[in-house]
Amino acid sequence: MSTSQFTLCPACFKDHLRPSCPSCGFDPKTYRHGDVSLPPGTSLGYYLVGRPRGQGGFGITYVGYDGRNSQRVAIKEYFPTYMVTRRVGDERPVCAAQLSQEYQNGLRGFLEEAWTLHRFKDHDGIVHVLDCFEHNRTAYMVMEYLSGWTLGTQVLSHGPLLPGQAVPAMLHVMDGLRAVHGAGLIHRDVKPDNIFITRENQIKLIDFGAARHAAAGRSHQLTSILSEPFAPFEQYQSTGVQGPWTDVYATGATMYYLLTGRLPNRGPDRINQDPLVAPSTLNSNVPRDLERVVLRAMSVAPDLRYQSMGEMQAAIRMAVPQAAQERPVEARSDMRTMTGSQATVDDFIDRQVVLAPASHRLGAGLIDLMLIGPAWFAEINFLGAPLITYILSILYFAVMQSSRAASTLGMRATGIQVIRKDGRRVLFWRALGRGALMPLALLFTVSSFHRQQGLHDLITGTIVVTKEGR
Image 1 (cartoon, helix red, strand yellow):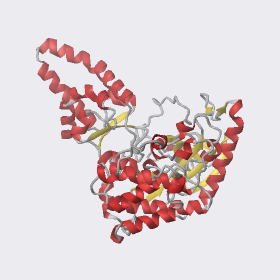
Image 2 (tube, helix red, strand yellow):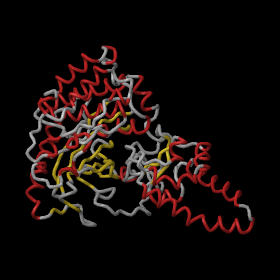
Image 3 (cartoon, helix red, strand yellow):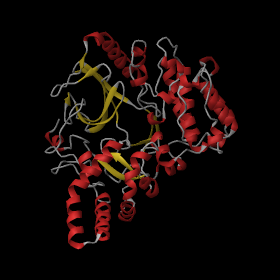
Image 4 (tube, one colour):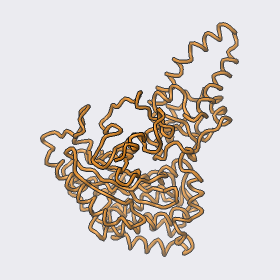
């Protein structure tokens, strides 16, 4: 690697440190690493590891940098959280002795699946796997770096999709799944958060749940690694027979969520008395013929579903007018309307949106109160005018949340930011209105069950997200 590469931000590899990163805010002088992920800047041969983009039951995905080709990549580390941990200062995972065989089985599955997916690097509907190797007693999969967000984030931010938006996207996803099934693989984790919309409006299927099948028959924590609303009943069973019909169920459940905005009921909860509400009841735009396809795909009994992805695609094409099936994914104007002209906050970070937990928001509020509370009380005692104090408080929140950092001092300390629902930066006047509604912030813990948003968020069309997840 050339020495100039080391001036790049080791967290996002998007900009140069001066002294902190103007793109993601990373400052090596103040950064403190405190979780099981690899610290930013860790070297893996030709590759450098940056900040984590996400963590699931079987792995951690990082922003990465390919020194040979001088480009950003995504690096997925095999790291089954229910089997391993990592000591501070040690890059190698530590596995309990009684789980070592299961860990090795999963590791082999991870490598086999990575190299199989590498064969599909020319398929435009599947994330491209560029490399795979063993290191640190584990394995790493190097993939193309994608900028944009997921269909799950799209629905969370803007509500259910129209059939004319959901159907072309899912037909494209099913093309990828059909190719993967033809190679003897099953995705086993199809869900809205694993369907990515790039900035060029391409649809990519990501996160193939590597090694999930190798561990599923032995794991006593199986439900902790399932995406429960989208997993069929056989994935809850240690002896359940899985096949293409398993992905058919998850694809139907994904379409259900995209069209209704409601998470489907868990597979086991539908065994005796099925409480699933018909999609057209929740969204009158859903045609009955399309509804029948979705509900058949979501049949609890595997033999009642479509047995292949091709069979399900044929049923959708029979149910939906031809014009709604053939809109090109790359140039489709309605998808650009869905995602907005920008998928992220200006040039901040092109990562997936993760809503801030209630604990982070409460912590930020307490820190802000401790920092500026004494000034408020002194001002009230000196001026005897609580209204002036309230106005100055609103201005504090408005100025800080509409700044480039998009956060107050307390929010910076807890690693969260305020953005608009379409992913753009909050401008001053919107932030001012949000500040005026801050008394309602006391209710956000109550309303956190409604998509982790407070009443002041809903009124002003804003969301609070983690810096790591954006």
